[in-house]
Image (cartoon, rainbow, N blue to C red; front, side):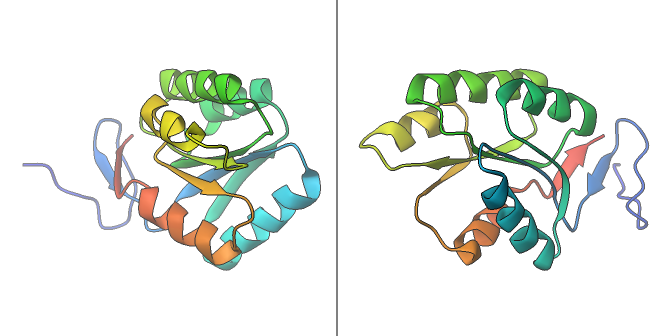
Amino acid sequence: MLQLRPDNISVRGELMSRPNPSIVVAGDVSFLRSLVRIALEDDGMHVVAECSDQMELIGLIRMHHPDVVIVDLGLDEYEMVRLIEKILDVDSGTAIVAITEGRFGASERLLAAGARAYLVKPFSMYDLTDIVRKVAPVFRVE
C-alpha cells in the first residue's frame, strides 16, 4: 500500500503531495515576468525560476522539474506546439499553461499538443493564479 509522507519529503519512486506548486515562468518581457512572479508568490506559490527563451526554459525544466510551466514567449503557433512537445519530452508530468494572443483555433491546437490550459491576453492575475492552481498536479512521483 502506498503511503504519503506527512512531512512531504519524498523518497524516489513515492508520490509526494505538493501544497504549493513549483513554477517556471517563461516570458520574453521581463516586466511581465516579474508581475506574474509577484502574483503567483502572493498567492502562496513557489516560482523556482524565470527565463526569456526556449533553450533556457528546457534547461530549467531539466534542472527543477516544476509542477507548472507558464509560457508567454510570443511564439507563432507552430513554434509553440513544438515547444510544448519538447517540454513534455523532458518532463511529462509538467503542466503547461500557454499564454496566447487569441488567434482563432490556436488555443485548441495548443491543448491538443499537450498544454493543460491557456490564457488569452489580456487576462487578470486572478485568472492566472486560478488556472495554475487548477492544472497543478496534486501528486507527483519523485
